[in-house]
Image (cartoon, rainbow, N blue to C red):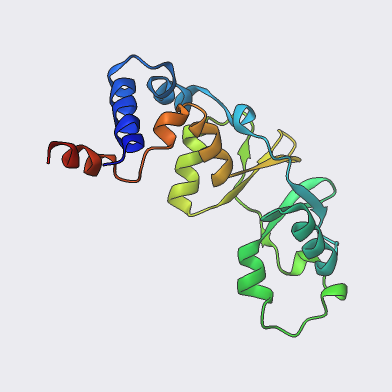
Length: 178
């Protein structure tokens, strides 16, 4: 076994035996921290009258996987990469004359910014969402939380040594004794 791998496994073993502040706090964080703490993406917010060509251009330029769609400033729908693939690709529509409202998912599940991270994570996993809009008390979008946002937020509680372990660290332990 390579020396780097041996050192990495030994470091991980030491870390797991110590009282580390990060992962030990994870359960508490999941139940106490709110989406406001984890939210880093204000999202792409467009009116439902925006034409598809403009919406798709902005998604591509800003590298956004979804658009929060509004009517009179309030969330009315969500338009995602999945909508593009399932509803638009292969159709003969004029993107420059077709508004978002015709292809958005209406009245999406939304969460308040004070929802706890565990609730959002559970909702995303059980419902199969990659993006969930975050709204204020008046239904105005304040951002979007993605599965990636939550994973990146939670990974901050783990030291780099643990995050950089090989995919199956136990296979390295078994080789040590051989």
